[in-house]
Image (cartoon, rainbow, N blue to C red; front, side, top):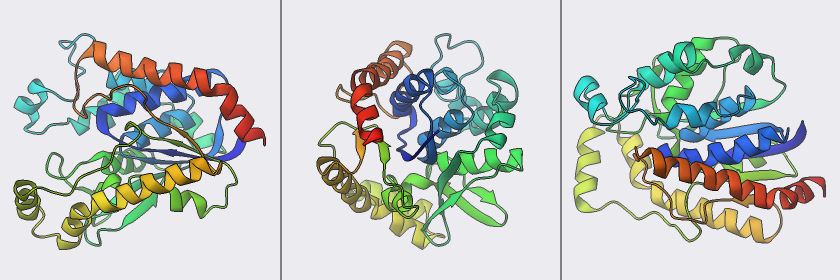
Length: 286
């Protein structure tokens, strides 16, 4: 295990890019000591710590749309009245369909932190639980639960939502641990920047989060926090202080369901890591 940090951005189905990158690293037995994941990056991160090559890919990419394993799409919307079936992802998948290796995760010396946003404060929190399996999956569910399309997730008596609202790229969190080497995996192309709410979006979220004003403000200001983090990551990359990898081909949408498109984007992550592997090893060994 290498004493270095790993930061994993979210992006819903764009997370298949990250899955490809991490599968290549795991196949080459490259494990970093500290992982901070956000949203889909959380799902990738726990599978990295449990050392399950291909699990994130298999959970996110389904060729047979009629196998009953889908976690999003028209059938889920009709049945569950929500865009994403979180019960499928954080109960059926880990416990039955795509078993999660809880034992390896719990016994790992690697440290994981999964970003969630406190709906009462609008602030990010960083959680993990290697002692309570159900609570671990609840944390992962909260980290991935996007406002409006997913219900709030309670941990104790506090409601939480997607960590990406408050800290999409947790550079400062990782640096607080004093790691000299940090690898950052983003799921957007170089040059991408978020835009502020349009009028219709602003009204929609203001109405949906009217009882959680600090959460609404965090979501409204998310684009500024995100763009600042991307700018910081690009600066640190130029200075040789982080190793940054992100897609160089067109990304998929956050709710993409096409098997072919998702597999191509997964393969892009895998192949790009293969191409940059020697560069990564040099960076980590300096």
